Image (cartoon, rainbow, N blue to C red; front, top):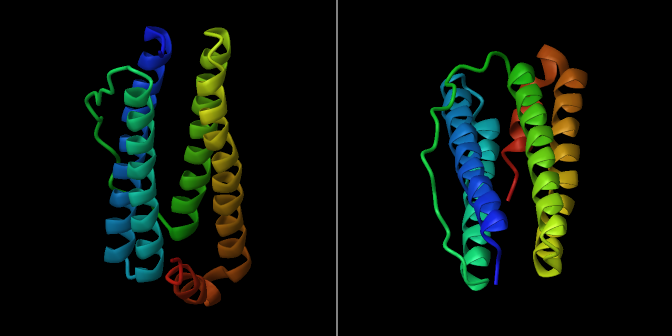
Length: 160
């Protein structure tokens, strides 16, 4: 049985994941309008991944006898600047999400809930990957410069 404190913390993360999904979808729309269809496609897939995280967290809460809740999802920005500026924002966002996930693990530890700690460590590992991927994209865009930006765009469009 999940404690109320941990249930509430995970429900907060569910809402945060949905905000992330909306953020990446807004970024996708922005990049498509700017003519970067590969980056738009990558961001749209990222949006779907964040929504899947929210659903995974909700299912976990329910399995543990709790009640999954989705709170109001705040408005996301709709203007993001250059591709470099946008992906710098993606990297910063993933770093913030990592901190939130770390805090969830801390709550699970303080509640002495080993099953939840184990479950949440999967998200900790996922965030290491997310930070590395977004930092790599920032680096690739910087190295490509203006002349190579459409190569980067095409490469990002290959994401499965």
